[in-house]
Image 1 (cartoon, helix red, strand yellow):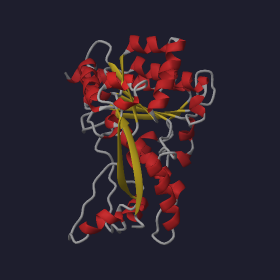
Image 2 (cartoon, one colour):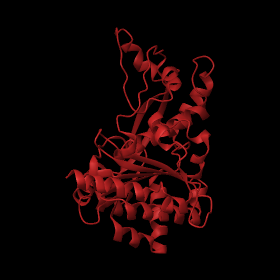
Image 3 (cartoon, one colour):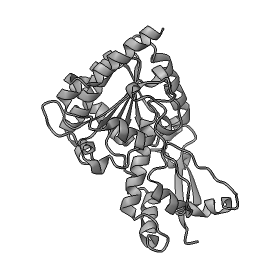
Image 4 (cartoon, helix red, strand yellow):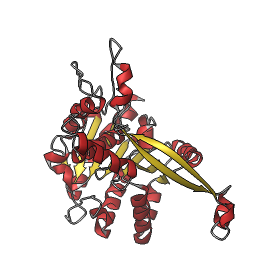
Length: 339
């Protein structure tokens, strides 16, 4: 029982959207349910039953760092392989962006993302990517809250209209029905004259459960480092659990565990860009922190290899010989010659 945390969850729903609005005045319409959930703090509990197997193979592009995998599953994996990406290096461009237009530091931490100049800098960078990238562009953000803040700010400044002139802009939906409609619209728009831009969130359906091949994602833009929400009960209890048993069970400390979760989500999002050997695309990591080795060490091996020292200011992103625009022009020309 030490490996589980009980949670009593209270859910309030209305019969439909209309009566939900009415429920603000008539509480009798609301339906309240209580459910008891047992949150598993230790994945090794589940993995234990698999150990009778003679051979277990775990394969994923986001298993790193492996030390976390060993401790969380309570298992040693004596054979480990971390091969290079199947994509040739000339078909992928990966870079980071550290400044806003004018040279102001662009740090997309929880505090920094609340500043108007940072929101404007993210918008300017996204506009630049949409201007030079054909077809589909994906942009991943840490939360729906930040997505709404950015959209509201960009509507005030007029940048939202500029983005819509460059691309057909869509936003990831929270519920399954709306999500299907949004994705249908995105897929039908990517090959149009403008192409499409999809704003999404880390750990959502778009970042982890969907395949974006060829024209569907010629560029992926990531904003910030997506640390889990420490106010979420499951996250909070997991952090307590790890600190309590870190020495006894060789678990990561709560701070190390948070870092691993952040980079797993980031690596998942980046992986939407190139999906097969003949694919190609660009990835822009927006956050000044990526210019420091401390913030790149947990990126997937293939991402680190392609990134190298390709760190940009806003000016060099647009004007250097290794700019995203020059890569897009080269690859677009190759595509037309192959046809």
